[in-house]
Every structure is written in structure tokens, then in C-alpha cells.
Image 1 (tube, helix red, strand yellow):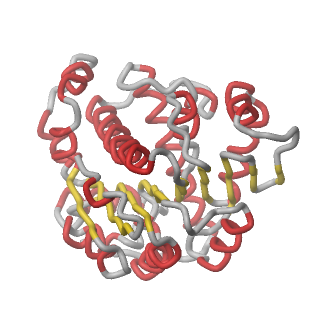
Image 2 (cartoon, one colour):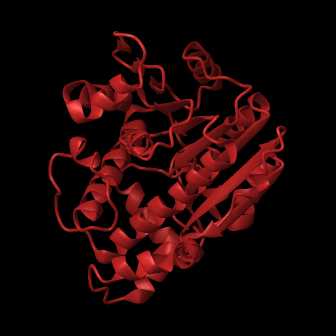
Image 3 (cartoon, one colour):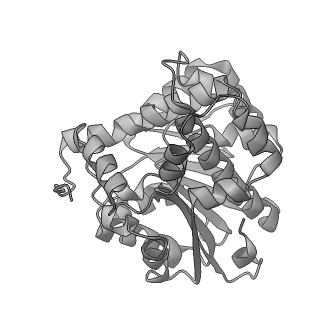
Length: 325
């Protein structure tokens, strides 16, 4: 297996991780331009559609977006939106605007990412009225709290923080009125894998310790010990992007274990091939007509190397353990 360098705080390692945010946003922009799903807001974060992406990449992102949205929306229904959402490593994600449009807003939506990415997102929001208008519409006073690395309104908050620094993260979230008594949903997509297993365990442990009724949904790599997984690791290493937490990505069991060992009551996980087969199949048939896919095996391999894992704890007995596909 490819040699793995330990995750360091070096600028190079962190910069490589930050660049994955642009990759994801560019891929989502391309897939939406082809009609895989609708996102009228991603265009304000990526100027152009960019170069063509392979059909299997577009279908992979489609499965990712549909899968994450399925669990997120199910949580909002269970809590009747009387909850808060914390998107960890949110990047340039547009979920807040989708929820506003669909009238599915939680009490407050928090995003956390590197200060540099938070600053970029805040700049985009400030300079693009289609992004800033929904914020202003959900805010009760004339002034938003804005500084270089944070934005705070009544219903939406962006925080620049390092997820490996739990005391710093906790302080900032409390400062912006994250409420430990409210049912809370944590989202992370290809984030924990860039932290050491110890660092990610501390983060998910902090979440289960701090919130008595919560759900954590994590999308990331799977089956990384086989040949296809090794090639993925080598490709990322060539860009100085080391998967410090790759050992947790061995299997669905190892993904679930991270949560069950850190105070979560229930955990479940599916590979993305399974998710692709259980999301609404009429829409899957629609997107499969968008582009011809020559090698179905490649899509299958790709989807078998990503997973969604979700964990719950439910003191309020809202039935969170029933949230599933």
C-alpha cells in the first residue's frame, strides 16, 4: 500500500485539503449544468461550468447529493425543523439556500471551515445579492455580524475554525449561540478523512458529549485497502493531499465503529452503490438518460469506494434511529 505521511499542520497539507473544496464545487457546478439536479446558487461560487467531467463522476456526485439530502430532510421532518444544523467543513455548499427555498429551515444553520474558506464564502455572499437577500430576509435587524472570518445572522452562521482544535471550535460555536439543548444534525463530507483517527474521534466524541439529541451524517471514502482505493490515495498524494484518517475507511464496520466507540447510541452505514439503488429510481432513470455511460463497471467501482455513515442519540425520543434509506 502507498506510504502515508502523517497529517501535519503545515501550510502545504492544509492548502491541499482546502483545494478539495474547489474540486467539489466545480464538479457540482458541472453536474447541475447538465441537469443532474437543480441548484440555482452554486453558480455564484464558481464562475464558469469548466471542463467536461466524466459521466461516472457526475453520477457519483448525484448519488452523494441525493443521499445526504435524503437524511438531512428526514431529520428536519422528525424534528419538525425545531433543530439546528452544523455543517463541518462546509466549503462552498449551498444547502442553506435550498432549505430556505423549500421552507425547510432549521432554527439556525451553522457552517464551519478553515478561516480562509470562510472568508471567501463571506465575500461571495456580500457581493452577490441572490446569496445575501435570503439571509437578510431571515434576519430580524438591520445589521449582520460580519468580520473577516465569520458571519452571523438569526438563521445562518459561518465560522472560520480548525476542526482539530475542539476547545476553539466549541468556544466559537457557543459565541454564535449554538444551543446544546436543541436537536442537532452534524454533516460532514470528505472531511474526517483528512484528520487523524484520533482527531476525528475527538470531534465526534465532542458532538455526542455536548448534544443529548443529535445525528451525525458522514460521507467519505470506503474500501480504501484494495487496489482501486490505493490508486485513489496515490492520486491525492501527488497533490500533497494525504488521507490521514484512511484507516477508518476500511469498511462499513470501521465507519460505524468510530461513532459507536464515542458515545453514539446507533450507527448505520451504506456504500454509495447501495444508496444509488435505493434513492428514487424514477429520478435515477432520468439522470441516466442525460449522458451515455460506456463503462458501468467504473461507476460501480467508484460508488463502492464511498459511503454514507449516520449515527444518532435520542434523549428526546424523536425516533431518530428510524431515519434511514
